[in-house]
Image (cartoon, rainbow, N blue to C red; front, top):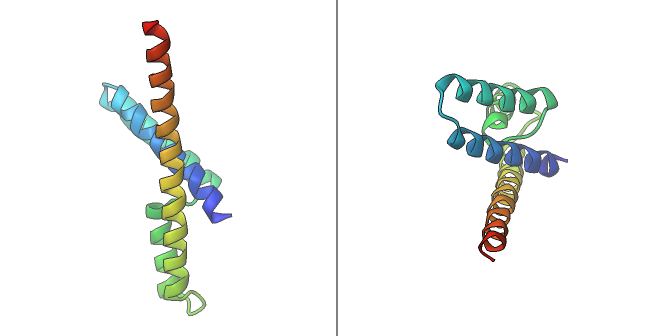
Length: 105
C-alpha cells in the first residue's frame, strides 16, 4: 500500500516540477506548490521527504517503531516516488516526441 501511494505522490511531485517550470509569476508558483502539497497531505500519500519526519519522530517517541521500520518505510517510499516521477516524465517526453514526429510529416 505504501508503494502505490508513493507512486502517486511521485507522480504529483513530477507534475509540480513541470508546472513550476512553465509558470512565470511567484504568486502562481506558490499557489501551485500549496495545491499539490495540500492534496498530498489531505489524502495521506507517502512521500519520502514528507513521511521521513513523521516516521522518524514516531521512532524517537515510541519503542514500537524500530530503525528497521524507519528504513523500510524510507526505501519503499523512495522507490515508489522515483517510479511515479519517472513514469510521469517518460509519458510527457514520449508524448512530446510523438507529437514532434507527427507534425514534421
